[in-house]
Length: 326
Ligand code: G3I
Image 1 (tube, rainbow, N blue to C red):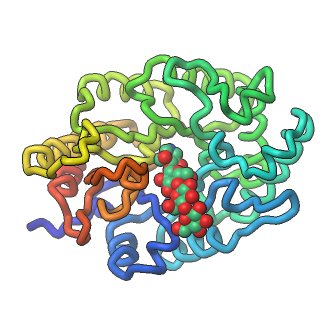
Image 2: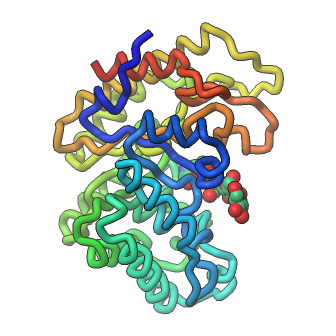
């Protein structure tokens, strides 16, 4: 059995989304994290609603812990996410600020958070999921409802982040990017607009929450289009569902595990082939099937989307990933 590690083969970061409670709560989790990955993303602890407890109060305790943990274990940190319609705190939403107040307070938030971790957090998702799959603006967002030109507002937030840490790589992040051409075109148009107007965008993230039934041809075509932007590319929240019909009676089987392994091999192959100056990282959205967000979704189904099984053994997916990097 190969003992080669993903981080030894990849000439880009191999990241994992983590929860602080899992790091402090389980040695096997922490040992797998620091043994197998060289970048971490906080699954929720670095979101606005977990940091910004009231207008003049910030709780950095979990972020400090994760940043220190990463530094002690020679890992980089990807910040997720400064702006996300799902993570505005209730007190902020209830204040119902007008656009001027909304932007001036968000500006202070970005300067405070990005400034505190200047030189310690290598990159940030400045904005996450502002478009619908068809490329229209996501209207339920706190952002779109406020601004006639939400993309202009987001662009100014990129500038606020860059001013707070000029060396930080700034990303726009979304899901189904390689599948949804409307969303991808909206992202490409935004990137062109930002480049033409001096907005410091460095990269684009496709979360890459896919499944063994996702068409590889569609992924290949959409991925090539995304890479054509010339920006850094982050596959930022990778997982691969095998229980594609969300069946409560699904039983994991070797055929599906092999399909999942092929998904990870193909994904690693695709990413490994992009130009070196566009390589940033591939991040798994979790370490072990034991605590994937897909089980938190309340439908009670067991999902098995990750590289390590419930007892931290490497699945065929790990071998597939490794194969794709060669
Ligand atoms: O709220 C408690 C918090 O008070 C407590 O300290 C903590 C202790 O573990 O648990 C918190 O519970 C939940 C947390 O996950 C841990 O399970 C939060 O309520 C819940 O909102 C949070 O859900 C996260 C979700 O984003 C919302 O932030 C998921 O873990 C996380 O996987 C999910 O990730 C999103 C990406 O950010 C964007 N792309 C989609 C992806 C999946 O939805």
